[in-house]
Image (cartoon, rainbow, N blue to C red; front, side):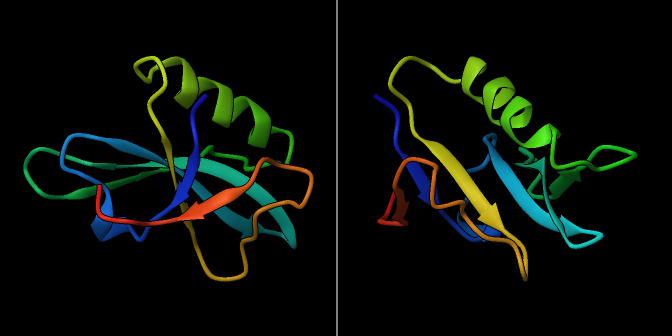
Length: 94
């Protein structure tokens, strides 16, 4: 089963995408952040962020992962990992 691993944007391996958690209008929302092959970080968030996008965002990223791959998670300031979610592991050299 995949693990959820908290990383900083710089720790995302080149060519991979991580779940991005951020707070918008005092609500937890989700997007994605990709470490592009050219070295740039591409932050992608919905035009109208909503907390309803959180589970959908996780499902989309998980669907693109190889079997049993870990889902990387970047949390911006004030974002949090909900207590009802599976355990969030800390980064250990990927």
